[in-house]
Length: 162
Image 1 (cartoon, rainbow, N blue to C red):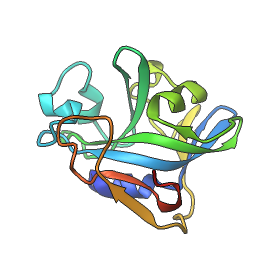
Image 2 (image 1 turned 90 degrees about the horizontal axis):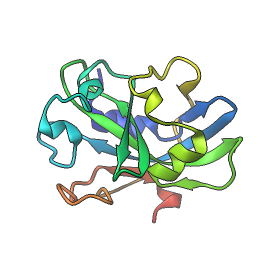
Image 3 (image 1 turned 180 degrees about the horizontal axis):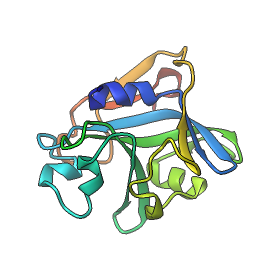
Image 4 (image 1 turned 60 degrees about the vertical axis):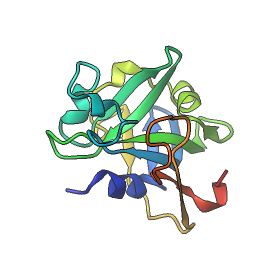
């Protein structure tokens, strides 16, 4: 098993596919569970976070601010909360323009809470393996949060840094 930070870095360059739409994952953020006050799982096991405490490789999709749905990958072994937010994609097929921001990404990809708990190895929503990116990986603090905001848990391909 790999820890959440390792999974976050490993997701960079992989391909997120939903039906005919596909994009290369170019930005992610790690959320570490109980000790990470920015993580939903820091509040414990709830109906909303149930999947984050389950087995790895499943989708944690939630509604953020009552407006945007966000897609996460459950990263830790069952019983240990930890997930990775997919923040940006570079389009490969069925999409136009880089998808910056988790809400814009899920809307363009047609991903919503119906995929809560969906295993990423099964169609129609999958993450496909790809060679590691040639670009260096930039590490920055996470953005758009107030708790633990200074933790360097945002990973993105360096040429896309911003």
